[in-house]
Image (cartoon, rainbow, N blue to C red; front, side, top):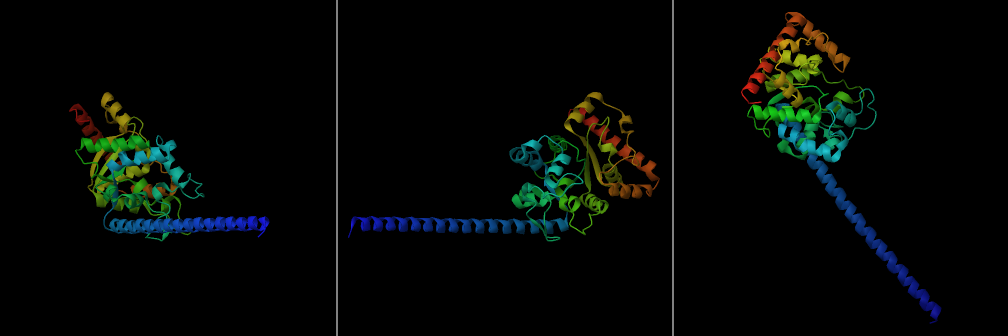
Length: 328
């Protein structure tokens, strides 16, 4: 055998060995990818089963997110995954997740994996944040025992701190205080990004049903001197409905407002800005629907204003009395 033939034979062996190594690596890669896909599929099925379980629980009683979760894990998740939004408002976070108001054409951000899970009620991808939280860690979700009346324009960290402080003041366990907060508990895909030919849920029915089933409400008020809370038709309506349904009502303040309130000790004149017929909602349709109902209430809008002012005044006075006693 010539030297040239030996070199050719050696070259062919090397090429065959290289092809075999490539084939082995490719087979190993394909096997790992198949295993990874199987793990991902199993995890998706597990999460979907948990969402179905959460949906069944929701049909029995409104579900809420624990105050402890909002004050700790939720804020940490924001700081780690979306640091640019940790100091913003819920309205800004909502625009980031579901798209800006009036321009929600882009796919939603898969915040807490909510966008990839399927809602059992309509078979469409996108569940409530509450259901997504349940799927990831069920201990953070339970039967709602506190309905929160608030405004999306609140700062995220201040809102969470206000609820945690409220639990402390009321001697409630924040891990077992499950709050119904619309941002988390409504499937915002249905409200903000409804499917074609699908109607937006009736807010008056949804909020009213949950409020009357939970039977306890806290009004989270911002700057009492010129509160956004007093100028939103939804919050005024919630207070009025809670009074009609004999729901237990309490008031708390965002941290900065609480310090100012305790220092200034204002009288009830700060509530004079409450005027239901001047209050606004983001969606004009909601505003007209609510105002239509309040016009038909006994005594009309003037009586609604009087009752809401009286209720909030009592709540603020109690808060002030607690501050005198050194409780707040």
